[in-house]
Image (tube, rainbow, N blue to C red; front, side, top):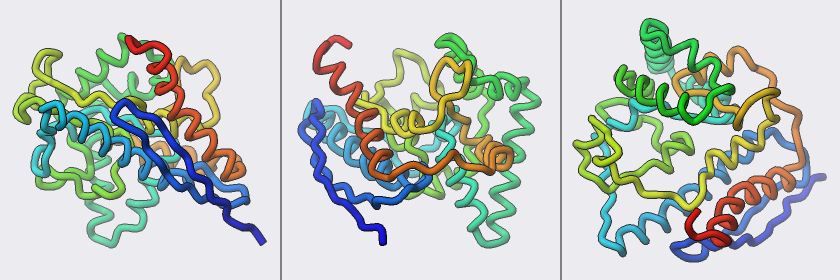
Length: 256
């Protein structure tokens, strides 16, 4: 019979130390089983970072009812895409059909705007592509399929990238973002990329493999088979190493 193993992990953040008690089974699990831990870790890092920002007089302006950022290009890993699809599948009717309709409408709008081809070759993007496509995407005003009354209708299950995006600039600036008008809360590390790096690399890709949130159902339908399972303790260890990497780099080079 498989038994659980518990370990205490400490991360040193610019805003202070973060201690977590992590429990993982001995057996092999899919990458998606690590997502609840990644979410909890992301929330704790965000919490400490926001407290530090507030201590320096910077108040977060993000609130329910302000959904401008829910029209941005949101990157999610493969495991997150599959969990999003499972979340939609578990919804009762008629809500499930309505949410699927929104996904379809978003995909059609991207097709009409000529963005679909760019989004489907995302593994070949460079930095210029990311900026160009991201701005073009935002200007289309495509709402997240889970956006209702300008608020996230799946807030507890929202993607990792959404958890890590916060601003202290006036909320109205987010509707017309510029480098001068948006003051982001800079996270010391990115949990969404740390989790996405657990996925098998895509041959020829310039960066980690990801998919836009609005194409999550399409991705899950086209890739129903998950990567091979791996020992849970190995996945957890790798996740924390991926999270700690940028922290170690920043500590070695504060200007990074």
